[in-house]
Image 1 (cartoon, rainbow, N blue to C red):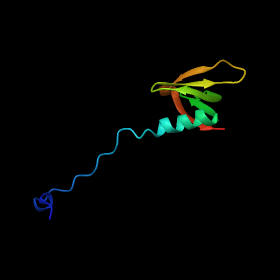
Image 2 (image 1 turned 90 degrees about the vertical axis):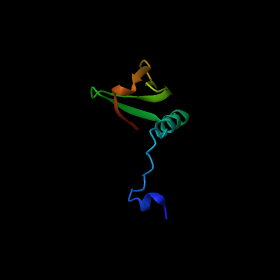
Image 3 (image 1 turned 180 degrees about the vertical axis):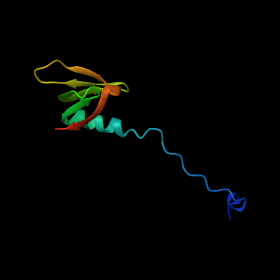
Image 4 (image 1 turned 120 degrees about the vertical axis):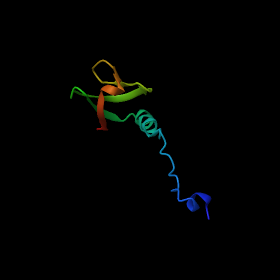
Length: 82
């Protein structure tokens, strides 16, 4: 038997990882596939284009017939593929 169980202490639960890196994988896939996305901003404005670049703080959205945008991630409510 485990010594902790004999002392009446509950078994420690594993810690949840702080970063899963799923956001990076998803953004990289969007870039590689040149998937068109619609981004809903915190101001409820929608912009469309393809993600060309990203880092920890922002994404670069390339748009057809309109200027490219650098959008801070904290200004994004959500984005989805179109």
